[in-house]
Image (cartoon, rainbow, N blue to C red; front, side):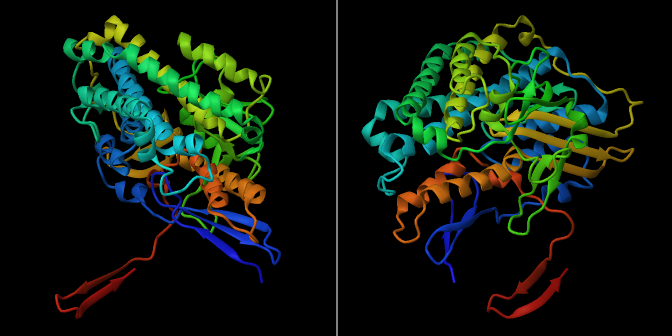
Length: 475
């Protein structure tokens, strides 16, 4: 009989997951599974709520990326109410989204990923963390904190709170930008640009010094997905969805509201997290990757100067073909952080962003219906799809969360790394940390991502203070 190794929990990620590695009699890896055991069920308990509550409800899924849900929900509500936000509202929503992108990317790179790169996969796990960065390089640690603080303050200045902001609503936003806040955001752009560039330098330096590892670590062919503008440029707030194949071949480009014509979801018994795939290719051949690496593998350009120059260098790594190594997610992530900072500057310079025309209201004659909202969350393409009755009460909710899109990729990455590094006859902590690191490349947010089809068994027990069971009901 072979053995089973369990890594539980997978560390330095958001949420709770585990990995099981199955070995044969000789200690060789036969199969690996990435299990997502937590269950949220948000789609089902949102049924019966008024659609306009969703920008507030859905961001409670997560404290790390609530703004992504806030904005995707708002866009879906725009479509349900059939109302077009004002241009100023769109600019302000995107500004908040850039704050979210900068803070989330900065947090993951410096706090969760960097310890592996700076100290090594085999270093002592007791000190392979952000606290060692603080001890050994306090200036770098302070910069990391400042980048996250800057993004969070943008969210707070717009929405009143750094987490679970009250800002975006159907048809626009609920408050204009003040001149005081505009100046405060603009005053730190130079410093934040320098921090993003330093992070890029760290990522590139490690990848160049470890080229062979970078090329093979959790490297496998897949398709890729991300939003693009009319010229094929990087888009995080709006655009069409583009899909490319493993060789960079064009597979599809479609409007977000048509996503169900191109994407389906598959269920495996060992995880609550579903596996999206491309309908035409079937499962699992049709799995794809999203997030920073996925986006940079499908776009043609980036619309800000410094990030564009870095993107050109990124494209040279594999001769213009898609980059397959999962460790390159860290490099791509910080290119996007640099884009986020530059894009904040562009938005703040747009005269329309200071307008007080921040919301359009739907005509009373509009009957609510069905609507889809899509944004590029830091972790990848995020879909919110709502259907309502004639009174605007939700009858159906479907979410495909960014981490869910990467589910099969993370499962595959863990398996590739386990087979390459894990030796059951002389097991080390560093071997298992590499398996975790393969998953960390994708910066998964497992709390956001899980839902299920059908009914879950439910049992409620009422227990008295002395431990006596008073009643029990089950479904």
